[in-house]
Image 1 (cartoon, rainbow, N blue to C red):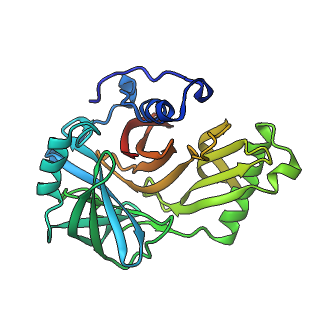
Image 2: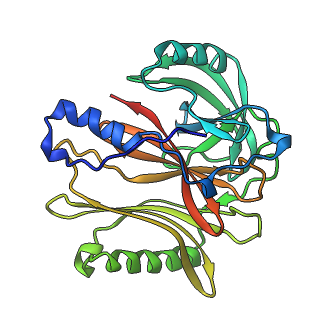
Amino acid sequence: MLKNSYCPSISITTFGPALIAVVLFSVLFCTRQPDAAARITVDPQRNQTAVIFAVSGDAGDFNMDAVVMVDGKRLRQPFTDDQKDRQKKFADGYFATGRQYRLTFGGGSAGTVTLKKWSEGCNSVHAEVTPSTSAHLGGQVKALATSSDSMGKQAGARRAPTDTERAATMDLVKRIYTQHGTTASLYRSMKVTNLTATDLDGDGKYEIIGSFTLAAKNKFERDLFLIARPQDEGMRADFVKFQAYQPPAEGFLSGIDFVDQLDLDGDGVGEVFATQGGFDAYGYSIFKKVKGRWRLVYSGPGDAC
């Protein structure tokens, strides 16, 4: 399991621009160990080390990041931003030209990705890939890939929300923003970054995962990341991450956006993968449902420049 570290709360107005980048990257994406109840317990049949990748981009220009290694009962980083030798060794092996991985979408098999080449980023390595899939990837619609032979073997369950689901979700979103002091006039400038329907627990009822942003005239930001499930005729919030903050002058936002879901431990409920922005940086987070509550069980850097 990931080692403990302290993630301090630091005012970005205290430092100069160069130090801000370093501090915010370490604060936003420092490695944290979840409490004991939130630890992943992996099915013994899945006890071989597997790598999970995030696939994103647009037609003809897709790329892939290594997000996490599932090693027995541990979720661990494939490498850190300062391990240049380890990054190269990882890329030479896992990102070798022509290598293929299973693509998953909505928690199930959805084709393959083929490695074209890899390159160094600012503090990480990235691969260029060619997906072979019927899933309509591009922009905010992302997917996962895995080296595992056992994860995500079932049919995937992910689609655009129906009109009814969208309307019910937007009613819920408005209530959440109102509870956080957002006026009706300000709420009208709220934008939907992403809204996805996916069946996380295989019960045939689709949860809704969404990301929303709202910037006031003074550029004060209000971001929301939401996991909601159907209840009666509406939607009920299962997980709410609301952030209200003043972005730095450069405009970097720390919004959270859905990547995809995949059941890592075979308990029948998909873990939710997401990205989070930072000061010229982004990182990856994994959320798991533990005793009815969604909890952050893993966070790691994507890249920082």
